[in-house]
Amino acid sequence: MHYKAYDSVRTLTRPLSFFLEQWSDALHHDLNPWRGTAINSAVASMVELPHRMLKDYPRQAFGVTAEIDGETHLLPEVVVDSLPFCDLVGFPMEGAESKPKVLIAAALSGHYATLLRDTVRGFARDFDPYITDWKNARDVPLSEGDFGIEDYVTYLMNFMETLGPGTHMVATCQAAPPALMAAALLAERHPELAPASLTLMAGPIDTQINRNTINKVTEVISLDTMRKHNIKTVPGRYAGAGRRVYPGFFQLTGFVTLSLVPHIKRHASHVKNMFKGEDDAAEVFRDFYDEYFAVLDMTENFYIESLERVFFDHHLPRGVVTYGDDRVDFGALENMPLLTIEGAKDNMCSIGQTEAAHGLCPNIRDDLRGHHVQEGVGHYGVFSGSKFQNQIYPVARDFIHTHHA
Image (cartoon, rainbow, N blue to C red):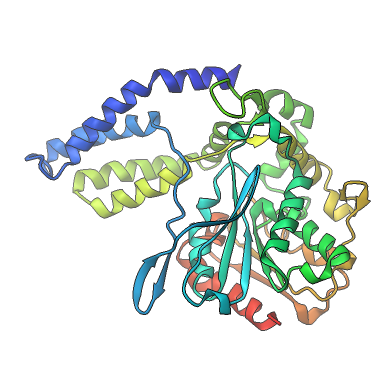
């Protein structure tokens, strides 16, 4: 009911959103004789903010750029492999065939993989990067079946087979647990396809360590309550009509609430920048929120199974994680280099929760292990921004190059 009501409101406000968009475009148009005046800036800010509240935020393009021969080029997005719930996207450029392949496993946690464009841009400097581009569950017909956390693992193993031996894997945020599972399963079943190295970035391997606000929610709200209140049915006008999902707008509400004050301050600063004519700063704000507000629905099974296995019952650290009828044996990982990276100010995945992966893999030699804590960054700073590009990415780059066969 919530989903249908939300969708109806969005539909009914389309005309108003369109009107505000046209008005905003006119106020910012180069031919507007009052553009740059105080009164125009005031009206533009009053028009833009409600428009941004009402507008739709579709999936953005990756827009990954790379420096080639001293010039900046926009890299094409090529679908290398396609499955019902995910595309494997590559970014071909001249000379990429001579570089190590890196599969970036993007988190399936509400945002599109395009949130990691900065991550891809970093790895495109020295590697041949690919990324899991997850699809919005509301757009996947029921005829394609369901999707759970083990399906995520299966997709990663399929993509590693598509890319071939010698491919390195980098997993971000909630992709860390299924990536570690996929690595262990490949090492045991198809060792030639096991990751040449595995880098886990701010991922919840053991959420019992340094429990944060998100982790403590499991102490007061049951899994059944979350299922009852958070799972909705996709309305009839979408291709996935009838599918039970955790809506993206629910997840976005949680993200915003978790950091409400910083978001309010950013919007206030945006209004000030518009008044002062700081067009570059205003455009940075728009680009950020166009991406941040673009969210996707997750299937009920993936959402509930992720909560149960990772946040409620802690399957990985307890050694009871399964794939089908088999227990996943992390002891099968013997020759795979493992790097873990954490942000010192991460309020979503606390210090120690990702490093715990080392304790689950007792047979990896010490000289094949690495761990890095980046001071001064929160959760998203581990994957993007200046500190990622200048301090975190070089750690991952050097680790992969050192262990590339």
